[in-house]
Image (cartoon, rainbow, N blue to C red; front, side, top):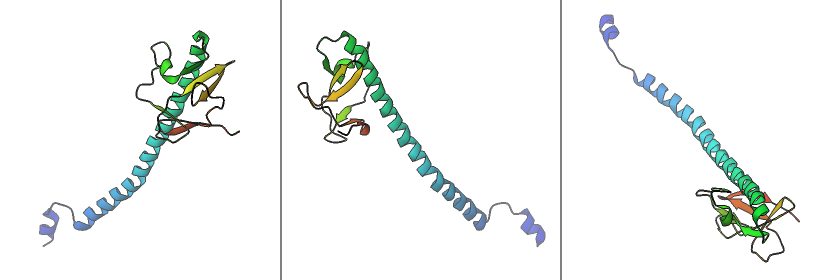
Length: 135
């Protein structure tokens, strides 16, 4: 009888259940962690895009005579390539509007329209808030 039991190959139901439980625990730990990493990386990428816009605006302002311009003007080979990034403003995270930029003495300010005297309080890049000013 002992020879018959020793020669059988395979796994028991208990061993299989233990493996499934262990894999479930690992998945329960890994999935939220990976999700958090992805969203954090997206926020960092959006903030980097904002920094690129600011630096490009400073460079463009040297050549610009009007003093106020749009983000779309910066999207040239000489200044910045935003690819699929969109810049939205105050009214909501997903709303896309034309944003005007003014650079005075190296300080970059964003406006809702060309004639506005009040700067934007919030600025979003790909639904990530990158700028908030309080007056």
